[in-house]
Each structure stands twice: as C-alpha cells, then as structure tokens.
Length: 130
Length: 381
Image (cartoon, rainbow over all chains, first blue to last red):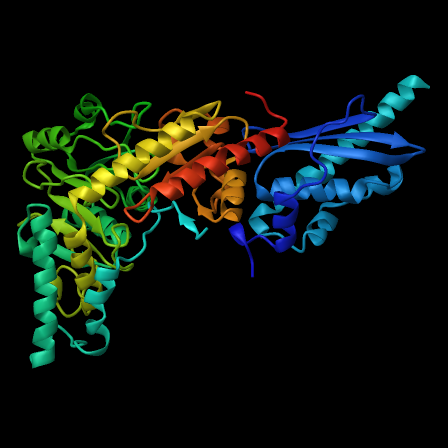
C-alpha cells in the first residue's frame, strides 16, 4: 500500500526519520541548489578524508520527496570516493527510494546537483590550497 | 488515536442520519421518477420533497431548484448556459479567487468569444464593490462571485454585491458550495439569480448538487434528453442522492456553526502561539466557521502535511508541491502572498464531527513537527 501522496514506504521512512539532517562545521565542501520561488532548496555540506566522503549532511526546504531524496543522497555518498560520488545519478536516488510519483521526479534532480556542487567546491578549495 | 480528519473543505463524512434516509432508495424504493407506476410516483415524491427542502433553505421556490451531479456541474451549467442564452457573446465579471471549475469554465468561454474580467481581492480576500462597479460594461450579462472561499474561508458581502447587480439589471451568480448551511443565504435579500449548492461538503453524499435558477432567467440547458428537471437538465434523477442531500440540509443547525466557531478559535489561537506563523484570509468574523489557513515560515506545506498524515491528521496545502500542475495556489497569490509564503501554507478545515480532544492533540503534535522541519531547513526568512 502506498502512503501519503502516493509515496513509497521507502520515501516515507527517509522523510519521517532522516539520518543526515544538519550542517557540518568547517566543511571541506558545500553545495546549494534551488530557490524558494520554485519551492525547493537543498544545501549539502561534506567532509573528505583520504579522498573519501567521510561525513555528509543536508538541509532541505521542500516537500516529502525532496527531504527523502536528500537523505538517500547522503546515504549513497557517505564512504564513497570523490570519483565514485560524482557518478551518483538521480536515477540511482529514485531506484533507492523504490520509485517516485513522476510529477515529483524533479525533486531528486536537486540531490545529485547539490552533491556535484559540493564536490566542485571541495576540489576548488583543494586547488587553491596546493 | 483514531484518524483526525481536518480536510472537511475537501469533503465530509456522511452523517449517519443522511445515510439512513438514503438506504431505502437503493433496494426498496428504486423506481424511476418518470414512471407512472406506484414505485415511480414514490420516487417522484421523494425527489420533489427534497427539492422543497433545498428551496426553502435559501428562500427560493421549489421549481427554481435544478439538481445536478455536484458543484462543478452547477457552476459550468450557470456560466456556459447563460453565455449560450446570451447568443455566445457578452461579458462576465468574476474574481481571481474562484474555484477552478469557475475559472476554467471562464477560460474556456474566453476561447468561445466571451469577455471575462477577473476582479482583484484585498489582502484578506474581499472583493471591492467599487472595483466591481468600475468593471461593469453595457454588455456585461453575469456577475459570478464565490460566497465563502474554499481555501481561505473569506465570506463575501453578497447583499452589497447583489444591490449593484440589481441596480444595473445584471444577473448575479454565487458559488456557495463552501458556505451553504454555514452562512445564511437568501436569494431575495442577496438579489441572486443563480446559486451553486453542493451536498458532499455538508455531510451529504458525493455526486449531488443543485443550481438555483431564478424563475424566467435566460439559461440554455447543457444536457438534452427526456426533459427532466423542468427541461433544464435531462438524465434520470439520482433519487437516493437528492434524498441524502436534503437530509443533510435538514440536520445542519446553528448549533453546529457555534460549535465549529469555538473549535476554530481554539485551533487558530493555538497555532498562532507557534513562532512565525501567520493566519491567511479573513481576520474577522467574515470567515467560514470551519476554515483555518496558516503559513509556517521557512518550512514547506506538503512536508508539514506529510508529517501530520504520519500522525493520522489529514490536512491540505496551497504549496506548489502538492498540486497536480506544480502551481502555487491562485487564491493565496491573489491575496498578495509571495511564492515563499504560499509554499509554507496549510489548510485545516473542521466539521461538527471534530472534538476538542482532537484539536488538543493537533496542537500538541504540530509544534513538534514545525520544530523538526525548521531544524531541517536551510531557509531563514
């Protein structure tokens, strides 16, 4: 049985009990995407250790799907190398959430985009340090 | 805790008394009201008795009530039927805060050559009588203004608007789906020529509504067939439905309104104690007794609804995220709210079946939800 808004159980689980909410102090990379006007804003902050994402957190203004997909994105990214994390796609996020109402798919687009921005931010910082 | 239903502006629970009144018309008294035999005449009597109940409730005559399949049909019938009777020309005045079935009928009529003016409303959702007067043209044949708004609960002053229409000899229609049995409607005092009524918002069954049509009004039927409903709407009558509709009107009382007013005040007071919450719509008494609409800064309406649902509480939102088209509420836009404020809105609509205990529970849960979501948000307005 589908729950609120025809969302899958996986979406509702990540939405009601997200594990990665927050903001990392002194992050190695930050990425923000979206705007209040279109309805969703997602900010990702991450820490990198030995080329791997050692910690990642999100803050999201958005609907059920936006919050759930932010949480799944963090779950997918944690522990991955930077190169692996770059490959995380929206399709992967949706698959992990056991599908999403098609009208809501735009929400998960934010997830992959914000992560890419955070990684870019990390790499730029790295370059400026070296 | 049982589910707490706070979406009564969407639809309501059928009253047990209504259901009981309807049941015989499915399996015992199932005749066709057009038949001459005993069972047909029995159905005919039930139909006409129901029509009398609806007519009396708004100060109309029995033969001025045409049953429809709901509010959407009644609004479509009025707008399109009047345009066709006018000879497919002319000008309609309506507002920016109508239900979609009025707005989309008007948009369709514009494609057929009708001219339409959509009146603005103020920040509480009220139409300006001066703006209405300024919009009138020689070719204006109909003014259609919603009585009680479905999203923000604002109740328009139909007496004043009706005076303007009468003075100019222009037909006046109101969509009273939300206000019916909650605010007094009198077709003569309000100079109304057409009124849209609906059953499932007042603890009656779905699939039944009515259009009040003042005697001798110019309107073209949309459904042609066996000449039912005084030749204005052909199709075999939904007897069980109209019986239920009439019963719902009969069981609705002023004590229900007083009770809902108290519950609503309690809920609004409690919600406004949460930091950074604003009430949308009418701030005074001219508000439907069952409507609450609030914006919670920095958190999204559908997400609030999702959490409430997880606690068994049904609500609704004007946020873009929850609509089929991903558009924000046109009503909240019309009262001047920004996209940011609209996306943080929720509507709670109560009924006589809600209890104080339920409201207490909502007021216990909602602040926790708001706190949790505000911890998640990157926004600070």
